[in-house]
Length: 261
Length: 177
Image (cartoon, rainbow over the protein chains, first blue to last red):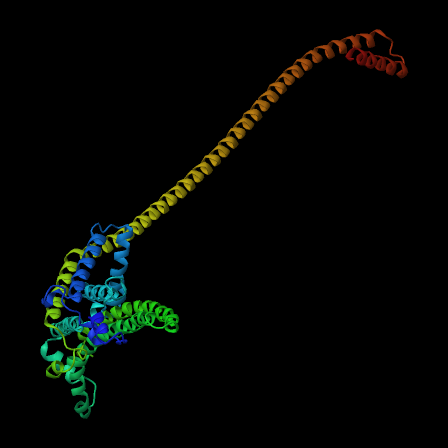
């Protein structure tokens, strides 16, 4: 599509835009055969295979593979679930572990050669994940405290002067039912989207400079160099975003489990 | 959505989700969740539990072994103390017995000495008695002999008398010697 556009405009540089994220179906018109969809399935296969192989033997003295898998698992289990949720954290570990690995692998796809597309830059996937978080934390809150008490404490925060409820109640409702899931999805999406766009700018820009006059050709390596540096930076952002998303999910669950907000 | 269609291809709102992606995202996530929950997390938890048990078991075993060692040490110390006490008693016994034996021997020796002394004294007494007896007979005989000598001589003067007596006594001394 990009090549088509470029040839259509007679070689002028077309800056990368949101249309670069709208990849056409690979097979005909079938919307289920786009690159992001294949990447998501690929991530499921990769994560499942890796962790099943790593945990299959589950020995007291771990093999290298088991140790690698365990490191990721115990990071989510101890640093995220246990430290944030505390008592009774164990039943949320599979969910948080799935969140973290799923987001991490799909994010890192953005800098893997040949794949080079962060799946989470497609808003649909962060939406789905945020919806699961939304349901999980409200569900555990209702289960723990009963529907009435749970919603009452969200709307009328205990220990606040009555007059303040005029201001606080709408804000609290907005926070719990709209802002939290929305920001969760948007933060992840925006980071991946912007990061990928940034890489596109420098890599495609470098490529375009290479086709220009000799002076521009000399600048081109600098664009590529920045692109490479940004790739490392992107890796950091991708890991960080997976961590933040899982951390916030754990925090929301912990908040719903706590007696007072 | 209307304005999106009107806008050029380039003006796509990236915040509008696609149905296909929503469906696939949900299916993929649930699939991954079920797989990890069924096959992965229980195995890791099992390994963690086993590891904890192994470490705890090891510590407990070590503690037990240490306790055992302490008990054995206490036992040996006690046995050693007992043995020393026993040796002390034996030594004391031996010393007492030795003293008794020496005392016994000393008494026996004293008795023997007393017996020998007594025997000697008895022997001396007998000899003395014998000497007295024999002396008595001899003194008699001598007296008789002296008397006969005195009678034989003329006892004129006192000077002669005393000479006779002196001579007798001299004779007596020489014979006694």
